[in-house]
Length: 427
Image 1 (spheres, rainbow, N blue to C red):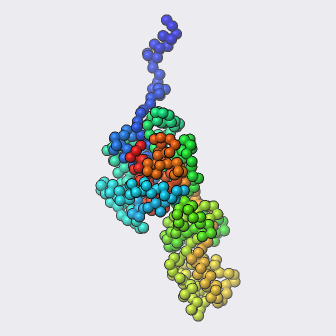
Image 2: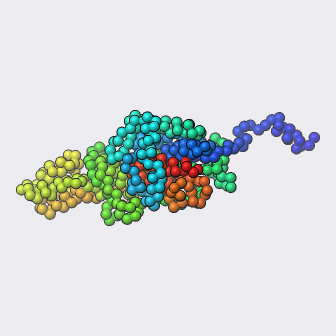
Image 3: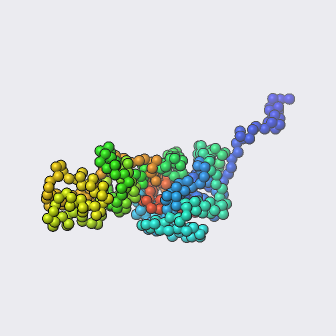
């Protein structure tokens, strides 16, 4: 009896434990990431009869959806256009946004009987809870025959003539199409990682440098000492980049100008106005804030007034700013010692400064507080109609991992829906 015969007999009688067997599951479309973009792509591909598997390392689907909009999910914006996005190519998002519009998303929400309301500036929120949105996506995926597996980590990803081979904690997968919908780096506490960017680099795709977006702004130590004891006070402002720092065609076609609430925090500035402009700020960029948008407060009232004392200016400022904020701003704006009577020129200078408060942020509060990631997979690497790679057939990147970043107010969700929809039609 030969050794080979004995070994073969032993294998038949005592097979290897199941965890050592190499079992490969074959599917048509593998989607990495069970967020807004990934699930939208999955349900569209499933409707086409494709065998679709969605995997995510989180313990449940749509974790970012669930915390969005204060738990009510600002799922789209009525006024969504390509103008509302930052990108190295400001035209890139136009095709996808035209193929799946905010009206299409509203129709889907209404078909599922989800009640919603417009909060402000075209922002649409679920009336009840963001869970309604994840339930919608899971139902649509189930009806389309999509499999979803959570708690699955990704190992190596390889590409060959037959498609993609992916090692996961749940086994080996083979797919003819691979869709990367892993999101960005923002909010690591809910599981954000750089996996999507790593995969893009692995396949030779260029990455536009990433940074936190829609994130609170941090003051330097001096500004913190001057302002941050007013934490919790807010007012309506216009926030914009300093004119000396604006570069035309740099990530958008026009200088941003946001009229919304600004909030002083214990570290700097937050509120919608600060979050909006933060996506455009880079280190050393000047932030310019109009504290009395559309109103002349000091100049017309006081140049004709016989009293030009600081107390008269303070009364005027309190008409537009919280009392403590008005007092602090005036004290910091006046020279020491304060003259008994201010000149016409001094009052005019104060009015000008009121409409152009200059702040040079020390930075921001990072990905831990950022709602989105600015930058990502370069748009010149992708087909704008399908979000497919121009280099690797059947490889797609959708959602936040792409260098397309929306303003605050439902725009990023609309990009997720639209990019996922487009990839789902072809993957």
